[in-house]
Every structure is written in C-alpha cells, then in structure tokens.
Length: 116
Length: 113
Image 1: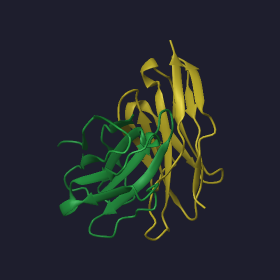
Image 2: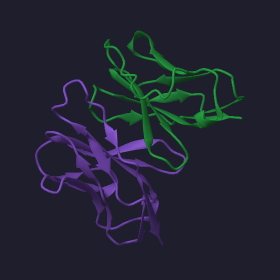
Image 3: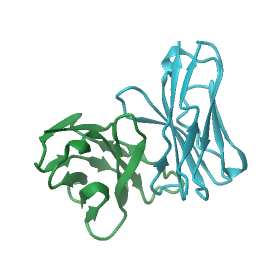
Image 4: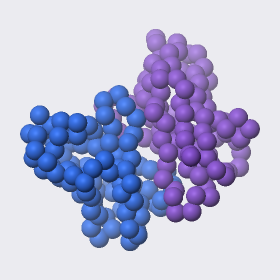
C-alpha cells in the first residue's frame, strides 16, 4: 500500500540555523513528490515538487528538497530558517504507475517552530 | 487570475441540520478535491472529481456526505443531519489535471453545536 510518513510531529530550530523536515514514502514505481505549507489561519500552499530529473528541487521561499530513491525520502530543507517559516508542513506522494488511482497520499504534517 | 474560493468561510449549525459548502475552482482546472482537516490534524481525503469521469467517493465518511460538481466547475459538498464530529475545516483544491499539484482554497470552518 502507498504511504507517506513524516516521522516528526514537531521540529524546533533557531532562527538562522538550517532546518530539515523529514518525509519518507512507500509507493510502487516512481513517485511524484510534493511539499505544501500551511501558515497559521491560512490555506495550504504548494511549495515544490519532484517529478523527474535533478534530485535537488528548489521551491518557494528559499526551500529545497532532495529526492533520495535508495532511502525513499524527500526531506525538505532550508539553509537559514526565518521566524516567518513557522508553519505546518505536509509531504504528499503519488505513484506514477497507479493507473487511474492517482490520488495524492498525504503525510500527517510536521509543525515547524523557528525561535528568534 | 483568481485562486480557489470557498464559501462560507465560517458556518455554525445545530446538530441534525443540513449544510452546503461551496467551492469555486481555478478556471481551467479539470480536477477538484474535497478534504477535511480537524484541529491540528492532517488532511483527510473526501472526494475528487476529474473532468466528466465518475467521482472518486472513496473518502466520504458516511452516506450523510455527498458532493456534486456542476458543469465541470463549481462544486458543492453537502452534509446531511450534521453531527458534532463533523466539526472541522473543509478544504477544497483544484489542479490542472488529476495528480498535478493542487491549489487550495481558504477553507470553510464548520462548527456543529
């Protein structure tokens, strides 16, 4: 069965430090991978995606994520965290060979708190 | 262009009443999704529509929940005989096609008293 895991419910990091929000997945075939962010009292926003090509994907607000096929991971990273990055982050995956079953499978979310 | 819009933004209702939630997707997006998000929780998939295909209703929690998408655009999620456990934020998203990145509306916060 397809699944996505975000092993950390919460990540705390000091402003200016690098941040990592982890995501691992299990799908048959090659995955499409997505990161979304939900700021307090706001809707979900698309951050970045991996479809094919370069394993390092750059997205909005200085975020990037690295696709690691051997470790089935797609961790979200940022070199220098900002207080304004504090939000709820969701990882999602879709199998590319699932025929008509192309729903996104969502992780449960990781709450990122960046401390000044 | 406008993003995904949802109405109402907030809805308070009494247990047992029916409610209708509306979603207006981004123009040209053929796929439309409904999710539910309870306080501090992840996304719970409810239903999606893709073009003229039969919708995938596999996430609807009970037969009290139904959704329509008229003319391939606006969608309405209906909850009949609401229960307190239906209280949540209901999110709508659309995408150019099924499986592509989704763009979310601001949600409707439903409170069932």
